Amino acid sequence: MSNTQMREDEILEGIRAHDRRALAKMLSICENDPNLANVILDKLEKKRSHVIGITGSPGVGKSTLINAILDKMNQGVGENVNSIKDMGTATNKKKIGVIVVDPSSPFTGGALLGDRVRMQSHATEENFFIRSFANRGALGGLSPSIYEACDAFEAFGMDNVIIETVGVGQSEVEITNIADTVVVVLSPDNGDEVQMLKAGLMEIADLFVINKADNPRSQILLSRLRKMMITGDKDVVICLTNAVTGEGVEKLIKELDDRFFQILSNGVFSLKRKKRLLHHAQSIVRRELDELIQKFENDGTELKEIKKRLLEELCRKAHKNGS
Ligand SMILES: Nc1nc2c(ncn2[C@@H]2O[C@H](COP(=O)(O)OP(=O)(O)OP(=O)(O)O)[C@@H](O)[C@H]2O)c(=O)[nH]1
Ligand SMILES: [Mg+2]
Figure: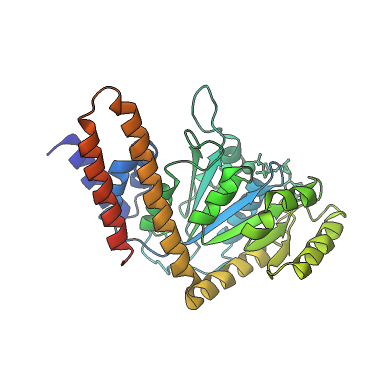
């Protein structure tokens, strides 16, 4: 048995047994060897998680809000969508995976730790798992291994997978490819109203949060947002929160749970999942093409092998998708 095979079996067994160390290893494989990650993930049964993208301009309070969400869930707030009783904890608290996509350092390619530090108080709790990913290679977008990481959390049986991304550039669009629900966070002290219009955040939001509700100007932002919605064709829930005190966060969790059950019953969830599979396949193709370009200069014979692998991967994804 090869080393890789041993590692694979160990991880498979560990994830099925809800061993956090196996999940940590799996997430590292997602980051460093996404092809191997896909091979392992294919052997795992995936639970149905609600994948929530939290996006918004820098500093609006996304990390603080996620921290507040975890606080509330730790107190038992929120629906346990998977109803997993066998996760090694005798609790019915929600199981949450958090992915923080940090901008890459051009020097190290590594993830910045700032957001993780913000959520540090929850980092070691049994029912939560927080992981930072650098967005290396994906200019302005999400991490190239985000699809695999999301699958890994689902295989682990998380109720929610929360993805924090800075709402600039490509990541805004990309988050709609992977999340079942996109939460756009705005804050009154960020000149967000103008940015919102510019960046098309209006279109991608399934739910708005006006954070920093302790700032009186949040009421102005609220009424402007409502006005914009009247003229638009979308009726989106708006929640007001103070992420520092946790005010309004319970209501936000309830709105998120309500939306999850709604999209499960109206077919939107399965459409979102089809979209995610398609974009996952595309990300594999892009990755393979990058490899191809790198290798081609040295050895043209690689071309056939890579073409074959690409086709196999696409057929596998299409088959999984039921088409
Ligand atoms: N007054 C007030 N301050 C807040 C609130 N939420 C967050 N903050 C503060 O706003 C600052 C930025 O918060 P973060 O959670 O780091 O914001 P972020 O959106 O994650 O920022 P990036 O990850 O850099 O994009 C911190 O100093 C927080 O303490 C709030 O509801 N009210
Ligand atoms: Mg943050």
